[in-house]
Length: 125
Image (cartoon, rainbow, N blue to C red; front, side, top):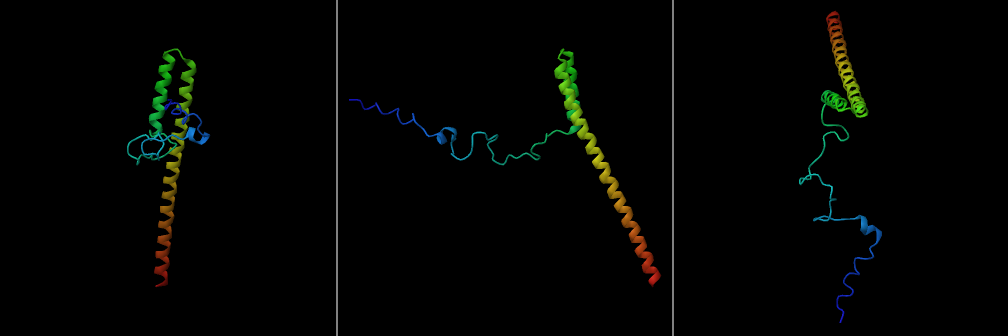
């Protein structure tokens, strides 16, 4: 009697769609969940969490270290990263200055309009 001869046949021929689909314990979420809580969201996806000034300093330090270890190519790579973030930092500063100048100009223009309106009201009385 061979009761066990068909036991292993069930898993041999799976369809292609079953091969790439794996389930974890609950059967719905993929295995790549980063935390136990499902409320994990990045504030700015695609952007680095550190600010640009810290990243410039970080990559300059890494470049200095790589150069001291004799790796000129890696050092140049880190310097390129540092230059990239220094450009981002300067563009952020330019944008901030532009916004401050624009708001100051708008405030001056509004103050001028207010004084002109007051003068007109006084002349019509």
